[in-house]
Image (cartoon, rainbow, N blue to C red; front, side):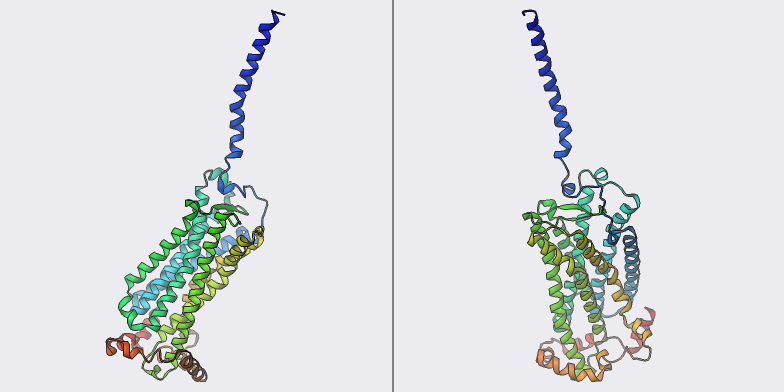
Length: 403
């Protein structure tokens, strides 16, 4: 029995050593399961979901068509800006150029990631173990999603001031001011996209594994960021709708009023038509996704992946359609479509005399003496009237034909 005691102690000591030495290995083996990166905590690759809406074909077609359309629109805008002599139109072209450039960069950044995933089928967890790449794409989605909506609202404010307070605007708005406004919109959208990195919300890998976006859930922080994204977008659309409606009513009154022969505003009608179409496209493309996000986080219901992908594809269509508004709805194009109509003289609305009387009655009743007070408020009537008058017929025709 005495001889056996040392053996038992030796066995007991060796057992303790085995247990102690095995603890670190157990902790190491269990570490990865407890240290899953945040962006993969809900959806982790690989995915078996392969919906047609998120296929490689759709992504490649949308990206290619959108990039080529925006690039073409940028070239046309640059030529138009070079030839324009109107300060009002040049500032509007800067806003429009900022919108088209933003759409182009948004498609270039996000489209290249999505198309690369469909081509290479890379594994996000191996490529991006610390979620830096996923956070970058999530920020890009939020930034390039909010920028067109905020720019649309800024353009609506600019046109509202230009049409309803033209003489105040002529001294307050310049090309440098327009560039500063576009830069301010970019900074605002960038600050909102950085909120998840500061702890408010989070970016997660989304099904089918080709993109990252804000986490749409009812968790307090995620819900707050989702509501911020949705409400900022919806508020921008509401501001655009309200101000554009007032601007259109005012512009119709000017075109149909007794001073329509002295105030030729074809270029303002052209800009308002383009702005209204941009607003309509943004509303149709973005409202479903924004409302879907707000409704999902507020109701606490399970995320419907099919609807998310469908509304996301609608939102992507905004970046594809925006440049065609300016490409197609220009006087140079309208003159080619209807060459018998004189687009360079008089008011466009005056081409429809049956509508002129009805619009005149409507706008006079709704706005009262808004336009009549402009002559009283203007500091220098002769100079202001000269600035509001567009180019002569010959020069305007020459410029339009060169574009």
